[in-house]
Length: 189
Length: 183
Ligand code: HEM
Ligand code: HEM
Image (cartoon, rainbow over all chains, first blue to last red; front, top):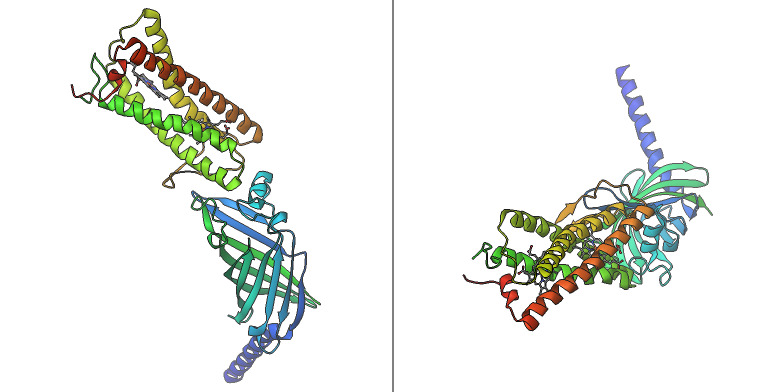
């Protein structure tokens, strides 16, 4: 009795693990990042607090490779001219030549180089960001939150330094590192 | 040597006077520059330098006030009664400016909705004054700060002019009272 219960539980756990492990491979295909996604950022400041905002205008796509997640691809374009912090004067400064220089460089681009699975529903995306004409490596951690029909929801986090992009204005009053916290909804097709 | 005497200022007063004179005049130029430049990154950096130097001046002003209150003052320079009186008035005005200008500057930074920390020479964070930030409050303090700063510039011009008048027209050697002497 006790033995059969043990086998039952073990088998149940294994099939659960198998199902989860398959979550991503089953989801193979081409996806478009939905406008319902949110790209939030935060820059800490000395003495606590900081500047938080989001980039409402972006496009992106994702190709999940069924056989080899490592060959999956993620590409992203953010429009720095759209960024908002809730404070117009700060927005103006961030869009200006002091930071993004949005009129000269209207796009911030992320392109993945590799995607590495780090857990049943987590992956690390390694790639590069191009901003202000400078390309520099960046790493993000993705967590698959939900898989429903034709859509996948991820939470993606990562830290991006400002200095390599010539956007180090205000360091060390404001941190060099910008923390990104994104909720991405990817729709198949 | 370090202390004031009836004949003139001691090294502490003299050192503070000239150190602060240089910083204060430079600070007016720096403040003006914050408004004159168009490059936003340069403007940001100039503001931070301006705030750092401003807080340094405020700290020096406290030191100078303490010293002044605990020291004897030299006898009035030989001059007419009315000139002695106006000199005293200008000195008082300059002393008030040494506090009022940085304090109103601090109020500008404290009422700005930008909420940029004051990180003095990237060493110490100075908290904002307990004022409510708003564009209107910032504009008010900004106007007051600018008026006081340029008013102080006018006082300095008459003050320095008077000192030069003593030195080169009256040739009474007044400048020596405000210089490092070994006596
Ligand atoms: C730039 C040229 C300047 C010259 C040639 C100059 C010269 C002098 C002299 C000769 C005295 C002594 C007067 C006496 O014998 O009773 C004096 C005193 C004084 N000066 Fe200046 N000064 C200059 C700039 C400044 C500046 C920029 C400030 C303040 C912002 C200032 C603030 C004072 C004050 C408050 C006193 C009264 C003595 C004291 O309390 O320390 N001076 N100055
Ligand atoms: C003795 C010290 C100081 C002097 C002589 C000084 C002088 C000036 C001057 C001449 C301007 C340009 C005003 C204009 O053209 O509109 C200015 C602007 C400014 N100062 Fe100062 N300042 C001093 C201290 C400070 C401090 C301590 C702070 C802040 C912590 C500060 C913050 C500002 C800001 C934010 C502005 C730009 C806004 C405005 O125009 O009023 N200042 N200052």
